[in-house]
Image (cartoon, rainbow, N blue to C red; front, side, top):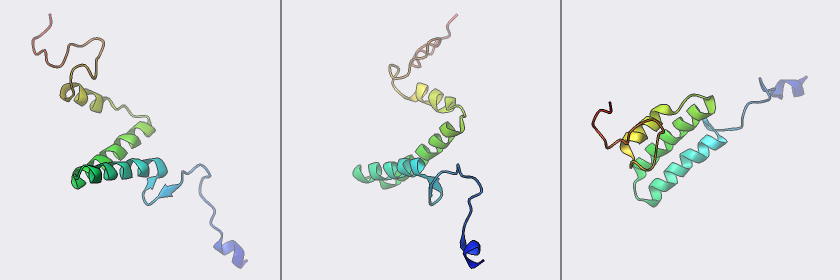
Length: 97
């Protein structure tokens, strides 16, 4: 009976492997942002980029839409980077119509 008391049975067999609070792929994104921050001598910005990357990855894995990020990049990034089919370029401020 002592052997049965020490055996841990997982609640579900499909639970992913975790490192600290994150799954393996989320941990790789977090460490990747951290390492990029170190290489660019921007430690705090690297940590922030890592956490933002983990947040975006979690949303992507949940199946939620990343349209907010897409729309923000439409306004911030250069116009040729993100082209939407039915919209004007972000630098055109006049109303169409």
